[in-house]
Image (cartoon, rainbow over all chains, first blue to last red; front, top):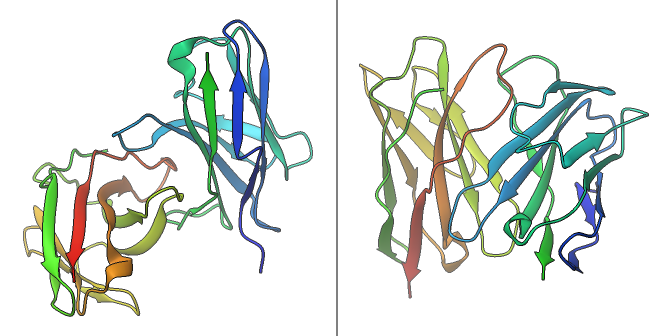
Length: 115
Length: 111
């Protein structure tokens, strides 16, 4: 079956611009996660959705970052007034169950470059 | 979540067993040990997880010491496709859904 998909695969933008990154989770997965990965580092947690609500947004670095999941399926990560330090690979993952522990299925990521 | 310590890199000959160690000396009784790997330019991939007992699946085996302060991931017959960064993660069983990645071990399989 189809895995987690993310679009676009690459995004180049200029400092100060607004960007949206999209994640399509595996069908039926209720949990969705966003992570950010800088070069040479492991992925860093940003936010976790259970259904439509953000159950844990403690990893969002500041108020320029916002994510939504209005119908409990597709999610969009939104970054306002982008900075060069926002350049990274943004990873999305989904998992099927509420109960922990649970395997997370990752997408291929969106590589964001802020010039 | 408890902190994990892994060697930054390891090599293994193709066809041999790859043994990747992980220290998690501050692990709590309700924390599981998870292993993920990340092949270049892909998202992380789940390998295996365990609580106390040793576990085996089609990809690997996980050996957890009796005091649970360390574990070893074993890839029994490494292939070139196993070249990746391997992450050892400890994760609370209930109430904490996020994965906390370290920098992992870069495993290179040598032909």
